Image (tube, rainbow, N blue to C red; front, top):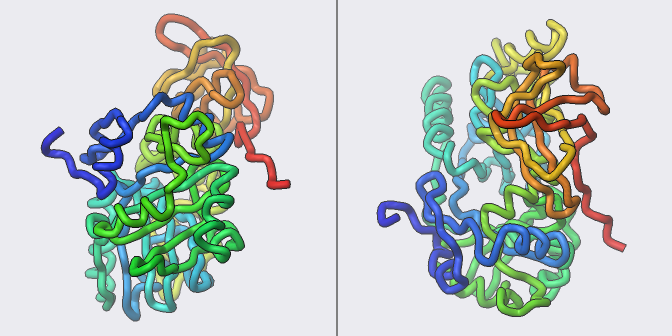
Length: 379
């Protein structure tokens, strides 16, 4: 793993016994003590994730907003400073290049967080739009000069309140820029687990100091520790329980954006500032909508028995192929097998019965509402 990039938290992972794997060219922790234990720690108390591999692209200048309006499927101009917004970036056929979170730092200053595997692709896409439209702005990839940490779980705000009284008052998808001693942090009320929590962007060189100040309660050896480190394995089971799509599974260039279950992130009524499309891929999506909608949609499935469905397995009705499993796991919280699948729109009604072909056996499955799990509201 010598050729892999290391995040600023690499020493932290070593010190806490992480099992490191190659993830999109980065050396990342898959687990520390085990996926189920880390998953339950996040659901019951709190976990800390290194998400520094995610791309962080800063756009600043008089055309930054216009660029993002064109690149993003969701409205950008009506965002307030201090607000972040989940959106898609599409190709011309309406497929998904990536799902992103846009931060509006100031009137003409934005940060875009992209998936690690798509960072170079999205940079090239944005640069192509800049060149084609003669936009004037500063485009800075800050991924390797910054770190990003996610603190997730029902007791996270209890810990954060010891450092800041302002952050726990933030609404979801809002952020604040804070100074912690000499360190400037962007702290957002966002996450990818279905739990409450924050994500923090900070200078790479200040990570060690910030960890000591922010995460003094992190102790994997202490059974009842408020916070413990968690790896990519638990992050995936948590997001699946929460019904959140994963790029490469529920989202992709060959999957119509209207199939993915994230219609809230698509502003089909967004008006272009000139001729043509308001955003790349809009014309294709409007054509899909006007022709009866997408041929397939993402659904949630519960599966009878202990076996799990895996990505790529065929979904069938009476032996007829009607879709494919996109994600699956044994849910630690629900103690049963769950999955998401991309199936024919005609078979998406709640209660529809399927069989999943594992190649060795057929598993009985049923369509259920998403998400599988919702965090209890704080009392």
